[in-house]
Length: 217
Image (spheres, one colour):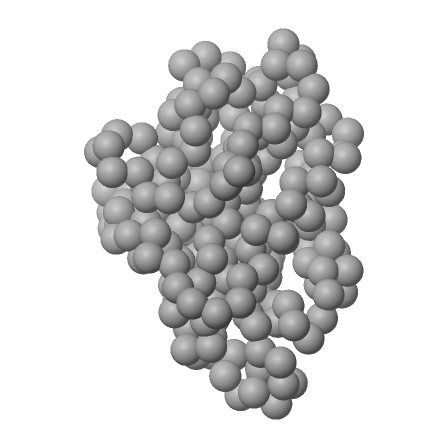
């Protein structure tokens, strides 16, 4: 199945952290996003006081209400914090899934975007005031598919440019506090991972990144 609500644990229990994982395949070529989503789901679900909620493809929300992306409408457990992990596979020329581009166009921009880390995403998943008061964060991983270290280095700006712009738009959208790792004095770029999945396995960069994300909960 392309998406699921995992809900590890009982919904009547309040968790410290609820994790949603959205992945996007490239328009053509190799894709690691679904595999890495499974890795992230298993890792996050194994952590104490962490519930894994929605895991599925990034799809634009065309209903006009709520988040720019679809997150599912199943019941979610109560949590003090919510983390949305975006896993985006990139083509060699930097192309990304069409739903990534559509979400970029729908993200709030400018002074009207309230950026206080409060309730929009939690409210979209639950009407409970407890969930509405949770702290919302995000993290984003750009997954490249270069098979040569030289081309990976030379083409990094091209391959990862779109995901860098997604990160910037998410940071300024008001839907999140400003990224997972933006508490001073750390820069927002710490919430973004850029990795070449054909040159290094998940144990080299992706798994340590996940551990870093969990350390902020």
